[in-house]
Image (cartoon, rainbow over all chains, first blue to last red; front, side):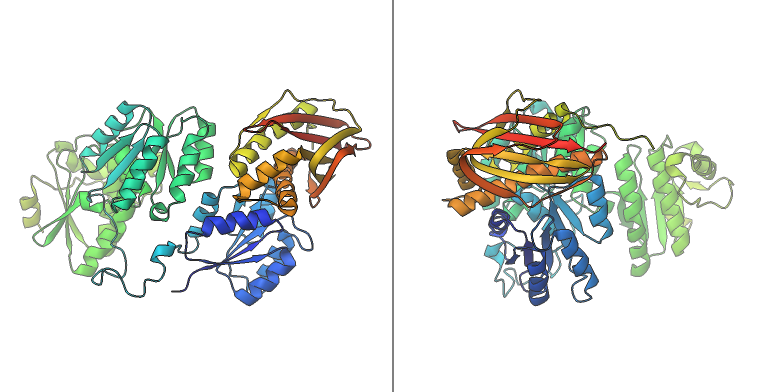
Length: 408
Length: 163
């Protein structure tokens, strides 16, 4: 695949220099134009993969140029990112209506531009650019999706050791390893070591309280390293520091975890940031049955993600020829919203796809599951859910998996 | 519909006090510490060194000036570009930084209902650049101490608001 071509349209040589410098570590072809009219010519000639477009320019400004790009059938599908110091609501709405893909507010960092462009095209580090033959010949073409059961490495950059300790405790049951550094100055050499050893962290959690915009500078330094361009960074912040949180989100932090940390939610928030497949935690096989085990401590985030991922998982069962699912609710004694959401969705999915299901549990109340679910579907958080039960007749609940399997 | 609240002189100073340090820190990596700010900046006034200017026209009419000493402008340009900066490079950097500061000021004004458009930045050099704006009701200015430089960056805004 050829290197992506990026066109920068700006009347400022300073901007061209900064953009060129920012993309220097990547295998890209840079092309430049000094105003909108020149930008249209270069776009028609070079057919770039992405256009970075300034707004205020002589000869033809960015808004007019964008309009002409979108009116040209040969150019209209090229994604355009506007670079503008004019981020007022009206201006943003105007350019959004014209079909701009994204916009970056000036002043900007090189890391910010790279981050936005990498959402539209694949950026490969220059060192890996030639790659005519795969380094690992046996490696599959597509990278295997990571799961929450993988041995993942989390780097925590926080001045308070107690924070790293509590995060380590929270993710321990997932088998993830936590390494902590008290500040960006200590984290930088640690990260350099991990890059050299091909042991880069899978996620980085950073306190937003470091002075002098330390967390933002740290983000930029991480993103400047091509080996770390896809590692998610999450901010750690007290609830009231909303300015820091917004600034961090604008910089590129994918999520903010507020202190005091909700340790029950934390592993699932981190898993979501890493886009992990969490179903291996809950699903297993027993003979010709598939089993999903729902724990009492299922978090809200975990419930939403498990519900979403279960749709694909159950469809995969059907494709693979399985037709029986055991829903194991042993240990569940309190039907909280996360559990109701997940169980109702899984049963609905099974009904839709024609998979037979049985419920296992030790709580006598479980036979009232149809009533419990239909009552709770009136709650705002669940009102979008379909009711998987046609009526509230009591459910047959099995004492263990063997009994449930025998009942199919 | 009620007419929008008019931006005051102190709002202009607050706005430039927010964006000048942000632009200098993000683009140049240098801190810019605001001085006290002057709400009745005299006009005409004299600026010197390398001065960027951008006009505002619409519901706000006026000019934003950013004045650097020769030494400071060269220092800033070389820090941004990562190497020696010639006169043209310095002008280009001063123009772009002026554009970023003014663009953000414009966004604040537009969000308050005072829409305006910006002119293309221009850069002047001289020891006695006289600046003024006829009918300006907003005349504000402030000096910013730039990290590692004996010279300050001066930002002056002259503006008249539509009734």
